[in-house]
Image 1 (cartoon, rainbow, N blue to C red):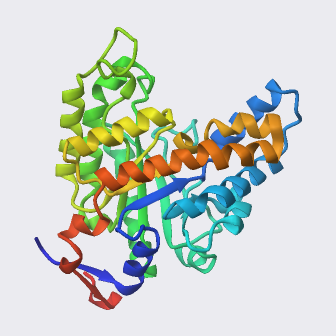
Image 2 (image 1 turned 90 degrees about the horizontal axis):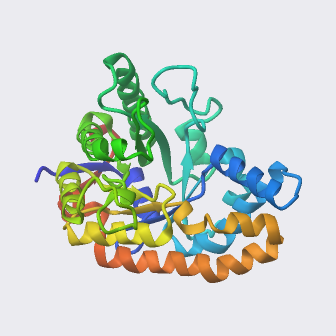
Length: 347
């Protein structure tokens, strides 16, 4: 394998967001629009008046209680500033760089960055890594996908110059299909695999690809009580193996809001498939149940849930990763195949 050159700053920060074995065991807490929507719904359910302080304080409490159990926590400065302050000092900080959501009136779900932020600004505010989310359909017209490819190149190049790792989250879609439908489930493996093949290329300078599991677990035969299915478990395992074979750099899985037991099952299947994934950025699978408790029972109720069920979720995930994930540097042939150099020597 060709030797991997990495700047001193980027290498050090990659180690800061990984555990002592080099596995990325990160908690995602950067949800913004979806979290506000969920809290408004819960507030209405329990007859409470919604305020944005509910969001700020939720992130503060969750980060304070659970971040020490993770190698890193993903937070946004807009709604997660209290969460950043509350996180364990020994836990790495990944900061969101993209605006939440997308303009539904513009075709293509185009990404955009938070205008008052930059890689250097976020480093100065304590970030050990950056993250952007891009909605991507490899079958969209070139005039849409060329914009996203250029966006990815600019983002990766900025991270390269600032010596900060770049996490790149890809969420696939098809505007003609409901993402929860059987029809979309049938094409999802192709979309995820093509997305990996594109953005794993060296020209993007992406350090960690944050990928969807390449199937919808609702439509795996035998995984649910439904009669409809898009794939057998062996086929799902095959997609995981294909995804790993396409990767030329570290990649981790996002939880995509599935229930905790399902996410755990997906990760175990990836391990069984021999997929060389390097960890997770797990969000709602870790803490989603606690949103209702927070609105209903307040800070004590939330803290009690986090100390019990939330902690259990993270510890079980850590155990599964220890048995199934591989260190991020193995994606480059192992630590001995990485040469840490000055930025000026990286091409």
